[in-house]
Structures are given as structure tokens and as C-alpha cells.
Image 1 (tube, rainbow, N blue to C red):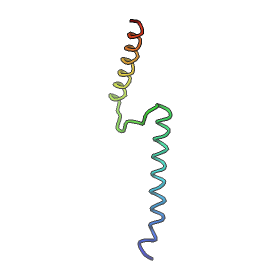
Image 2: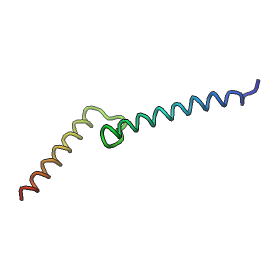
Image 3: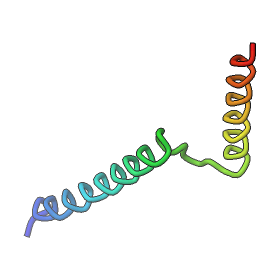
Image 4: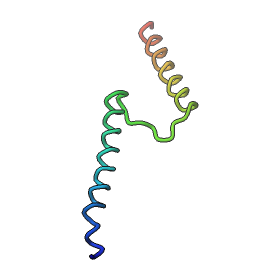
Length: 65
């Protein structure tokens, strides 16, 4: 047996890891309209909600003028 005989199983494993990552990326992009921020914690989520709220308030204020 030689070392190159293990290349096919390793390629399959590596390929499946890539496929799983791309599926997660696609699902997050479809659900939220943007890719998931890696390492997001509670603070990051709260800041995103605050930013969204501020943008909505600015849009309402600009329509009122």
C-alpha cells in the first residue's frame, strides 16, 4: 500500500466539508439577505438591530420633510 491510496478518501472528506460550508452560506444569505458574520456575539447582534432601527427612523424622517 502506498500513501497515494488515501488521497481519494481525503478528497471526498474535504469536498464534503466545502459543500457543507457552502450550504450554510447559501441558507444564511437566503434567510437574511447577507452572509453570516463569523464570530458574532450578543453585542454584534444588538448593534445590527440598532443600526437597522436608525436607518428605518432616518427613512421615515426623510419622507416627512
